[in-house]
Length: 314
Image (cartoon, rainbow, N blue to C red; front, top):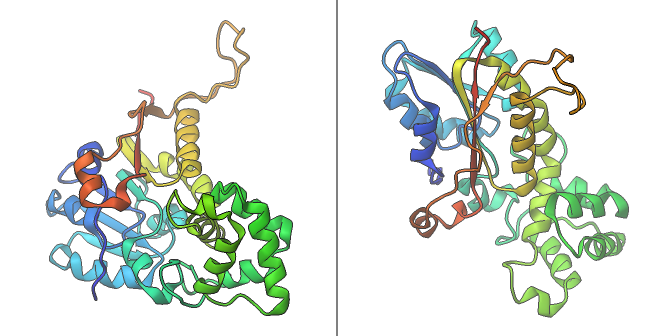
């Protein structure tokens, strides 16, 4: 299978994971295994990598890519939100590093049948895990106007969200909106022509918003990061690559809270709340791709890498 995906910020991730040859690592978003391959190359026979993905195609492609490291790799078909439980089942209580590379892969975008892209006319799906129930068609054809508006406005940061939601509801009264092409046309007709002339494809933000809703991406992220930090061994690092401002804000705020969880009023001379720091934010500002990387891989342009290091109290 041709699972095309260029790993973003590859050298920066490997550098910041501080990989120990005999360490235990988890890649929560295995994809085409580009990052995982480089992690495995740095492990010895005592090192371990656990790779997670909810996409069957990714599991198959990664299994092939990592075949030469089969003695040190375990691939798990599951969302990264289940990482703590899945590792616990396998007797793993802590890891030395975790990577999350969020967003949608190039393979998913380029596979017309998956319904992620406005570039192809395909059934409205957008599920990263095709065994789950809710599809993009369900969102588009069953959410009321207000709910659609909030999804498109909040997750897509789309200024014409109200008009898009209203037009979706109007069109679907005549017949359900069943394909990406039909949805893209509704979105395009909702945005003034002069605004469509710049800023990329007019459907980009709405498609992104619906994908995030279908896969509950922001909720999953919020619920997972604290548990992942708790799983890190002393000096272990959590590296998260985001492609969306809302994702980045969630990561930044949760990292900051874990570094400084104190909830005492600022006028208190000493902390009395008893909440202890779990570590330190390594990246005061996010690491972003170089101009060279963006030139080679345009899809990396919005990527941001943030890193948290676990520090146990001595």
